[in-house]
Every structure is written in C-alpha cells, then in structure tokens.
Length: 257
Image 1 (cartoon, rainbow, N blue to C red):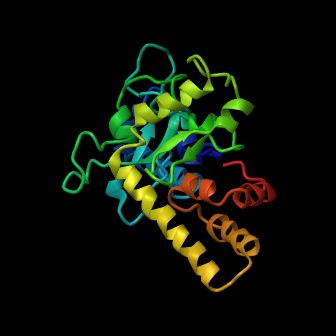
Image 2: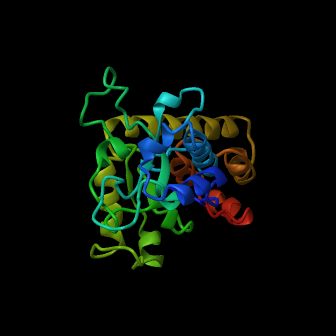
C-alpha cells in the first residue's frame, strides 16, 4: 500500500450529492434521469487517475480496458447506517481497487488468495488498518522480502511515525501488521506477482554489471524510469529494491502520493 493524493470531489458527484444527499451508491449509478450515471462514471475515472491506475491496497495495475476488474471501494462500509453520514457518496471514502483475486480462482485457490476489498468486505476497520489517504509519504510504510515476496512493516516508518492520529491499535507496527492481515496482502497470489517484479529488476541490474556500467549511475537512472510517469505496478516493491536512489528521486519530485 502506498500514499494516495486525492483530488477534489468531481463536479458531477458534488452536484448529485447536493441534490440527493441521501442517495445510495447503487441508486446514483443507475440514475440516468438526473445525471447519476454520469456522476458515477466521472468519479470512477477520477479515482483511477488519482491513483495513477494502481489498486489502492495491493498496488496491482488497474486497466481501463478491463473495467470488470476494477471496483469502487468504500473504505468505511457504505452499508453502515449507524450515523447520519452518508458513506455511499462521501468522496473521501471512495477508492479504486482490484477485484481481489475473485476472477483468478482457476490459477490460485480461493478463498485463501482473496485480497483487498474482496477480503475486507463490509467490516468496519476505521483505525485498525491503514487508510491510504491518510498515510504519510515518507518513509515507505512497508519493506519487501525479496526471498518470499512478502510485505513487512518498515521499522523506519514505525520509528518516524510512532503514533498515527487515527490508529486505535497499540502502536504503528501493530497497525501495519493488521493491515497486511485484514487485506491479505501476503497471500501467495500477490507474493508471486511481487517476486516477478523484483526478479525482473535483478535481471536489469545484472545487465548493468555485464555491460560494465558504473553501478551507482546505472541504478540512479532506474527510479526516473519507473517513477517518472504513471506509477508502476507494485510500487512499494520497486521503491524498496531501488533504495536509496528511489527515496532520493521521490524527494526530488516532491512525492506526496
């Protein structure tokens, strides 16, 4: 999971919310008479753009050409009616996510390989998992185990951010661990995908060595290649594997998510 820098509420969603403050997400997206369907489509596009086409939780790539594999996630479940707040249409409550492996059961057994929203479902997790909209951009929240493909809490992040204002758990380390557990971010399906990314990067490093390029100069060129445009899939893996050059580059572009 990486930080997400969210844009302002899209105009059609803002207009629809002002006109129909008690509408549900489903009723809005099916409302062709009052611009609800347009508000839904615009909001979905803005979410994907804000996240530079990455799943808010696992960081896999979201492809517009396969919309059936993209889901609009409500961080706080929209089914919660215990307060006057309408979680359905709250722009700050919306994220774009993948379908969490639901369509990959023929390759990876389910349910043990479900992740993200498919695993989180309608349970309220405010305060006991990271919200990517409230995640400090430096340092990275997670490190990466290049042997197993697993994410682990970054000790530096825990040290610099020992108490996050919304955390209801004992400390930041426990919050990171629970985020991995709740979203099942270390399922075999995601670990295998991350390993492919880091192994490809290792092949690039090997190529640099064989071409007798100066290691520091060669490696310093990679962050710009990966982070200079759309974010790459499994951003956190590349950020970890390209240390310290990744952090230097992200600081140089004033990265905020």
